[in-house]
Image (cartoon, rainbow, N blue to C red):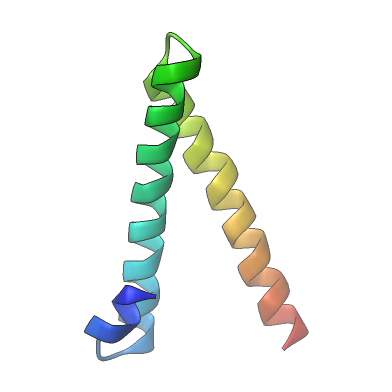
Length: 66
């Protein structure tokens, strides 16, 4: 939500929100991978892909509903 306070246009705020979300997923995936596997970078990218797809699906569904 923070980007919506700092950007003047909704489009810019949405792009900022996407970037912040993907960076957070990357960080949390890496941390998870450090504790659970020998490949933390792979875990980070898997988390970004799965989380990104889930966020995209939620956005598309919300747009479709109204």
